[in-house]
Length: 168
Image (cartoon, rainbow, N blue to C red):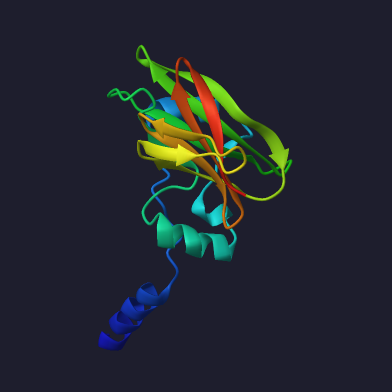
């Protein structure tokens, strides 16, 4: 009996962790249910290499959803990396909070290709590597990243979204 328990502990200790906190709040669940076949990217959708990198740099976070305070207020908005597995498509959608409801913004239209993750960046300085333009972002922003390849940063200011190319 002791050997069985020890074997179970060893198996759990060396098994790769594939679960991530990808449980969205009720408003996001309702949005996803009304937009099938789109589904939120999950850590299991990442390649083995990307999964390792994600867990190294974003341990405990969901690669398909980022909670962001785009206006600096107390209401959370949600950036979603959505997949249509039937058509091998992905898109970036932001559900922006305001007046107790979420408003949809498609920041990157459906495209075929490699998997892209989404994560929250805190307020602070940033720059566009293509133009050299420097920006001080006052609130949370959204990073839309192809692991080890390219990243775009989206932030909300003056009533609209803006984009910076932060890596290429």
